[in-house]
Amino acid sequence: MNPFEVFLTTPILNLLVIYYKILETISIPGALGFAIILLTVTVRLLLWPLTTAQLKSAQKMAALKPHLDQIKTTHGHDKIRHQQEVTKLYKEHGVNPLAGCLPILLQIPVFIALYNVLLKIVELKGDFLSDINSKLYTFIPHLAKIPDTSFANFNLSAKPSDWQQAGFLLLLTPLLTGFFQFIQSKMMMPLSPQKINALSVQKDKSNLEDTMGQMQSQMVFLMPAMIAFFSYGFPIGLSLYWNTFTIIGIIQQYVISGAGALNKYLPKKFQK
Image (cartoon, rainbow, N blue to C red; front, side, top):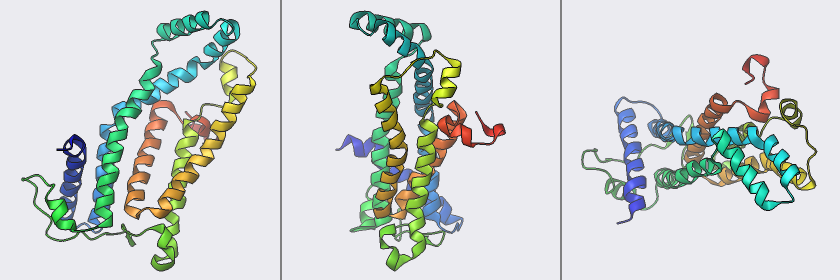
């Protein structure tokens, strides 16, 4: 038996069906869509501590960057001394460079499982009822019929790429997906160099650092464009999950470490 199915995909599927059955019982319109939203919120809240650790680690690393730049300027010619000073700096400030990577690695299997579940639910391929019911726990009532995929006047199984048949409004989905991703990407960028330099050590950047900074700036636009392109060919149900996940991520980012490079565009009372 596949451990990935047993410990991730199947529990997520069962939780989604529980939410759907509850919403269907109380006659909530668009029960499947709201069930996807509730499932996404649940998963995001479960991952909240890991994401918080990741954000705080990135925040600490950003705060130490001026000191790391100074060490590189002073000891960059001596690799051994450079490494010793960097290790000493991390130890003094209680920073573990790997702390920001571990939460991401732990989240990847959950993302894959959630994606597989939602893709199966919204596409309704093959012998859908038999396939889904065979994976439900004994205490969960089986689905008697295929779920209604309508939600907010959209069909969760429809794809924006089929807008000529399903309607022009479907194109709003990739646009919103790209927009929310852009907001989150912008927030993940550090404060402007001018603001950082006002709080830390002044230093001229090397050509390599300039290049990396330019690449980071380009990724702020490239990544949202890629996500929007993918959502153009995915069922709307998957974009509903992705956008809900991103919006909660934006809220968490703001609460934990502020608005990042987006800060200067916010009203003063919301700047953080």
